[in-house]
Image (cartoon, rainbow, N blue to C red; front, side, top):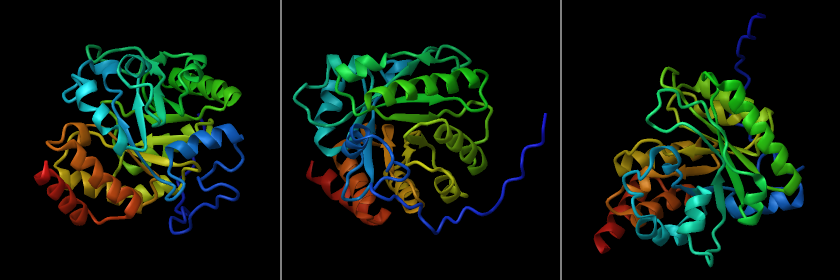
Length: 292
């Protein structure tokens, strides 16, 4: 096996990648329909997004905070830029008069009862995404996992199907139990996902070197919220991510598991779209929470 090239240091994180003809990184040569769908997810005024991730049930069942999506999530729809959900939830719970863009989970397989979670397959036909007027689809990619090759091929098949109908694909970096969550791993995973055709990537934030992850990925990156944190910590993480090149967040537990979800999503919006500092955003959260 040939030696892997030694990683260089020429990330030029201080020089944004040019976006001629369209405001989103790496998207200017896409078809009009795909750019239109991306423009529904990423606000043209800022080039960023606050996606609300509620797709956890596809392998975890009724996660805390998602037991009754009609009660906990539907009231939050006016405050997010896009919803990341499953087609089952979209059809059964989300009001059809909602104008929010929907990004649909398109992979599935093992549940949390299984040890190996990387054994996923495509779990949704792109024709159904068209029927549901989806603004995009998302799929897990397990770089370094036992079923790495299958998950990569799952994504590339979905990308091909998306290109035929103008629906963008979000590749989601899935970190296995034995993998190190550091910038080196996420540079590798995000770059592979982008190189193989995903129009944007969802990945986790790391404190050391996250700017090299975003700089070396030629398409937009949205930050995954991950586990529930204290509100100030979650707002700090979101702030650092966008200041270091992320095109927004796809946050779930840190919003719907908050004691005041509406206040929290308003604070996240202030960070992502208005560059509010974490303490300023936390003050907004506290004020809105106090008002009920």
